Every structure is written in structure tokens, then in C-alpha cells.
Length: 219
Figure 1 (cartoon, rainbow, N blue to C red):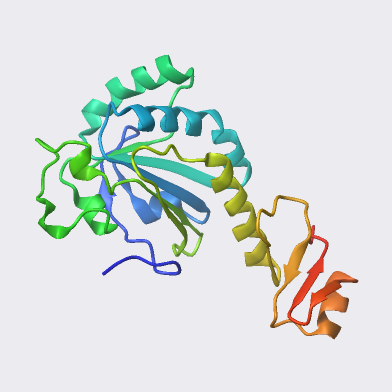
Figure 2: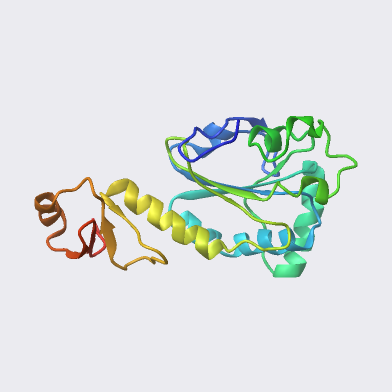
């Protein structure tokens, strides 16, 4: 069955570059981003892992843990990290999961069950669908899924922007409009009546009968 937003993120145990983990225990009471790669030593993924390392403090500031996964053994990840440092200038300090038996890739529906149980002999093209990002909340529910083709590097600024929206809207009865950025006006959800909106937000602009905008809540 395909994973969807608001599904519980499947739990698993795995070896990583930081030692063995149980995924839900590793997440703890905070947020997490799991992002996947079809193979080690692939050019686009090399730039992505370095880019993520470069903005890791921004994720930490939002209380979000980072973890990567690649369809290769953990022993290979250490050598790849050296290339990432050489290519991007950044050290990958977050854990990288080894998925040599394809267990996690299949658990997250990135590969079909008939893909086998070994990364050996598989090419990046064989694993082309292992290119997804999952944002997972403290309740272990999936909040966002993004899947990219192999030829398109991921935009981690967009992932941060989405996390800002998800965290804001989890705490306030608002939604965020297209291209919203931190600090810009937000949308009051339809479930909030006008009187409650005035009480909560002070004032709002009615753009359409069903579209009301207000300043971003700060508390």
C-alpha cells in the first residue's frame, strides 16, 4: 500500500554511519526529515548530501533531525562522505542509513516487493524511485512527501519553507498561501468563524467570501 500524508511513518531498525537505530526511538519527541538516494557515488546525490550538511543548523533551529538513506552498505557510506566533502566543502555529520537489503526502500514503497533483497548488482537506474523526502512530525505521522527524478537536485530551501508552514499550521488555525515565506500573511482556515478570527488574530482582510488573510501569528 502506498504511503500518504497523515499515515504513520513505518518504523524500522537499521545500521547507520552513527551506529544502529530504531527509527521511531531515534526521532523521539521532535521532527525528522528522511531523504533517500538510489546509490552511493551518484553525482546529483553527492551535491544534495553536501547541501543538506551545509544548512543542517537551519533544520536544528526548527527542532528537526536529519537522516539520509542510500541503497548501499554503511561501509560504502564512509568513502562517499569523503567525496561529498571534496565536492561541496561540507562534512556529512548526520546519520546515513545503509539499506543494502532494500528493506527500508520497500517499506516506504520506494521500490516494489519484487525488487529482491540485495543492493548488489543494482544500478542507480534500477533504484531511480528511491528519491523521496519525508517530513515526519512528533506524532510519527508523515506530514510531507516529495519525490524527485534522478536528474533534478532537491531544493532544501523549499523543504525548510514547507516545514515552517507545517509547524506554524500545526499550532494555529491558519493555512499558508502559494509561495508563502516566514513572516508573510497567512490564511484563516474556514473552520474559524469571523468572531473567533477577530478574537484570535485581531483583524483580517476578506479577499473573497471564503478567503480571509491576516498577519502571521507569532505566539
